Image (cartoon, rainbow, N blue to C red; front, side, top):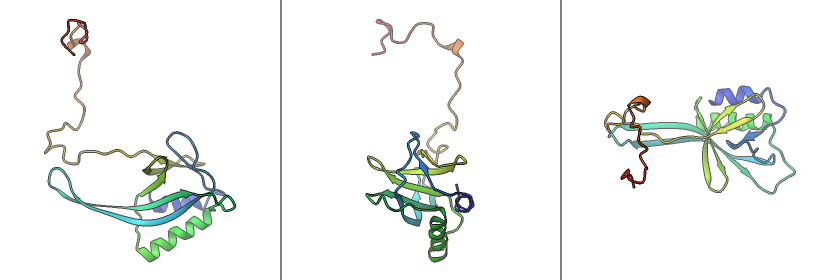
Length: 155
């Protein structure tokens, strides 16, 4: 989800809720402690220099049960960060601490903002000789003998 998309969604909501990938909701007394721009300048395993930028939201919940972040307040924080930090319409990455700090993508299901899992990947597959797709195997070409039979030499 990009900044422009969350801003548009916030104008339609009465309350904000973030849902973790396991279905649990982030406690309703959360705070957005940071809105920022993160730049990653790196070299991939194939030697290509790359730059990535994301808009970063950090969610935090404390023992402050008397305050709730309302949609218009978060919209104001986002607009201020765009102005002061020069943040463009970037993809959003959300940091949230469970057992450790996790980084999530962001989506929306019509009611809640969904924290989506992110995956690592090889960015130089062709140089690492990694196929872009898993090879397809025909089941009929596989051996009929189980590979882990007692005399199968698989262990």
